Length: 191
Image 1 (cartoon, rainbow, N blue to C red):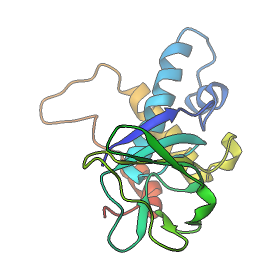
Image 2 (tube, rainbow, N blue to C red):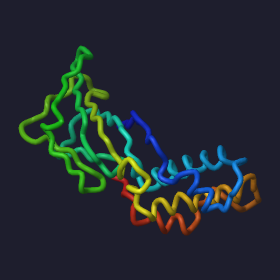
Image 3 (spheres, one colour):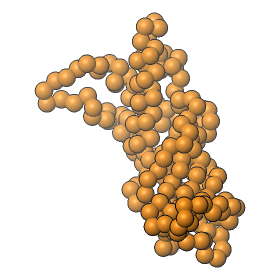
Image 4 (cartoon, one colour):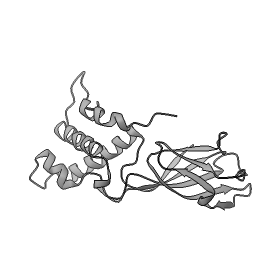
């Protein structure tokens, strides 16, 4: 059941200036490094929590309709169902109006259910159904919960301060306890 990122976030949840202030870096020499650490920290936080922080578009591909009628949608939080396609045996697609679905944006993970009747069966056995969704807390850094933004700043600081350190028996790849504690309430359990 693959998921494909269609459009990445347009901004990061933490700006370069915010990160530099948190790191107490007053020069511009490391701007590229810090920007890369911010992006990496966002991706890490998203992977750990199974959430999208800034608005993104994804395509979910499924082989068949779920038996219980409810498609569980990750990453969370679900903003909107934007398109649904079912592939016929000949490879052509049948578009289904997203309004034919009940969309639960309040749950994490979100859920999508066919509103009434039976949805059309896919004609091909693999990858026969595509759902396009928008996910994330919003378009601006301020839309992201403060503790997730703090987890990103802390992770950026940890990685920035430990660049190039390799010691026997130690791993700077371990998630700092403070970051793990900030992420814990936002983790979406595996299905």
